[in-house]
Structures are given as structure tokens and as C-alpha cells.
Length: 315
Ligand code: TXA
Ligand code: MG
Image 1: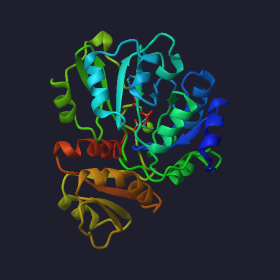
Image 2 (image 1 turned 135 degrees about the horizontal axis):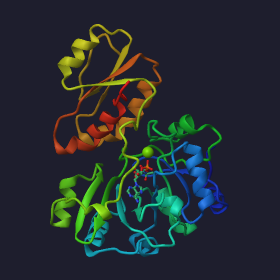
Image 3 (image 1 turned 90 degrees about the vertical axis):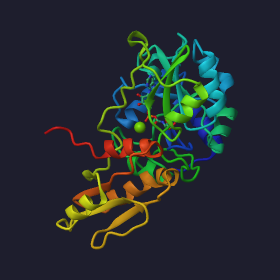
Image 4 (image 1 turned 60 degrees about the horizontal axis):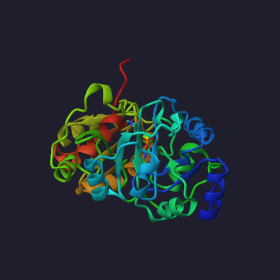
């Protein structure tokens, strides 16, 4: 159900969930101060409650409403990468609802860049807890139609068009002058190190914020996926599989097999990734064969998502 900005604000203030557009993927949002509203997120996604959520805020001025500590390093990173596909995990204020942080001492914060959600955050004055708007372990949504496909037509969606970054934000935890990468994203580790003036380091064990959502079986299409190290090995395997479809990197063709080729440019490929996987999944093939992207830093985040999509739990 597509709704207006005004309706979205009304529903959120009543403690309901609303799917919202961000530049990375669509989020399933609720008032981050309302434990009952947060419970509806977990129920709708069928997500375990031990997996904390990202709180979306309008600007870095609101960090102090949620975090008990924002070191000069955290401030520097916020200034460099917000608004944008970047999440900071900081020590939480005690009054941050434990449903949002799933009992962790920390809270994850992000200022999204999407203009519609920027307006929503400013006009509502709310902080919005929002995981990706899909059922737990399924493919992330990058269009309003993807959200409805995963969560049903009844879900209220604020339609902001197709997401431009296309994969989930980079997550970094900061403690004092140290930082640690918790999830790769399109803001690369090297770019963060440059702003930080230091490489990533392990944050001491007692303070280490876990990223429980980072289990292997994640971002998966319903169709089984197989990842191939080389185009040649994919090609050889495909020769005996008329029931397979393929996801390729770069503009080339694989005769005899339905396929989608992602752009050769990693930023464009990321933008296309989830829509391509949704389309391949809808072909009801026996298997999706995936060409592994190059082993270079620009492809790290995309490769991470593909490895998760292709992960097979041990039998
Ligand atoms: O781009 C994104 O980040 C999207 C959009 C909607 O903003 N959101 C998203 O949310 O990907 P979700 O819930 O699918 O992933 C959030 C990740 C999970 O891996 C979760 O474990 C981690 O953030 N996380 C949240 N709070 C945390 C905390 N306090 N400490 C460590 N990890 C945390
Ligand atoms: Mg997710």
C-alpha cells in the first residue's frame, strides 16, 4: 500500500511500522523510542530479537540524544560520511530502549541521504529504527515493489523510487580513538582509514560491539546460488545445466543460459545487484550461477553480499 509523507508521519506517531526509502535499501521503520512499535518490526520481519537495529536520525546534531559518548574520531567520521551510507556504532545512552539495541551497550546510528526520508525525519522529529524491509534472511529490497513482494501488499510503503547505492550501509564501531569495521559497504575501509588517520583496529573484547546480524545465511534469494571463482568455471558448469540462470559481471554474454550482467563499474553494479537477484529468483530456475567479482577493494562489499547469498549451510 503506497502512502503519502503525511500519512507516514501519522502512522509512525501512532506506533505503526512504515517502509521507507533510503539511498542504500528500503527500511522497515518505527519510532525508536517506542518499544511496542519496535516489537512490530521484529514480528513483521520474523527476525530474532537478539539482532539490534539501526536508528536513523536527521542530522549529526541528534547523536547526543542517543549516544553517551561521541569521540573526536566519531565526530570526524560523521562529518565526512553523513548524510550517507554509513552507520556508526557508539556507546548508548541508558535511556535508549533495549529493544532497539537488543540488550547491547551500544547503539547504531545513521543519517540517511535520501531526500524523502530526510524530510520525514525532519518533519516528524522522530528517530526511526529501521532494518532492511524484507523477511529475515531474504533479499534486501531496493524498490517499493520488492518490499511488497517480501512483506505483502498490506505493508504501508513510502515510495521514493529505486535506491541509488543499492547495498546496505558500511557499519563502523568507534571507541575513543579506535575504530573497527563491522560490515563492509560502499564507503570503503580505505576511505574511512584516510579520514580517521589510522587503520582499523580490534576494539578490546569487553567493549566489542557484536554485529549479530552478520551471520552467513543472509541476503539470500529463494533459489540456491553457486559462486564461481572464474568466468571459465561458471561457463563449464553451465554447459551441463539447462535449468540454471546466471549473474555475470561486466558486459558479456553466456549463450544458452538466461543471464543478467551487472555493470563493470562497482558502484553501478551495487545499485543493480538486488534488483538483478530478485529478477533471477523470479525465473524459478534450479540454481543461480554467480560470477565472482574481482578481488579488489572496490568490490569488497558486493563480494561480501554475493558470498552470503551463495552460502550453503552444512547439511
Ligand atoms: O543501509 C542500511 O544500513 C539499511 C538501511 C535501511 O538503513 N539497514 C540495514 O539494517 O541494513 P539491518 O537491520 O538489515 O542491518 C543492521 C545491522 C545488523 O547486522 C545489526 O546486527 C547491526 O547492524 N547492528 C545494529 N545495532 C548494532 C549494535 N549496537 N552493535 C553492533 N551491530 C549492530
Ligand atoms: Mg537486512
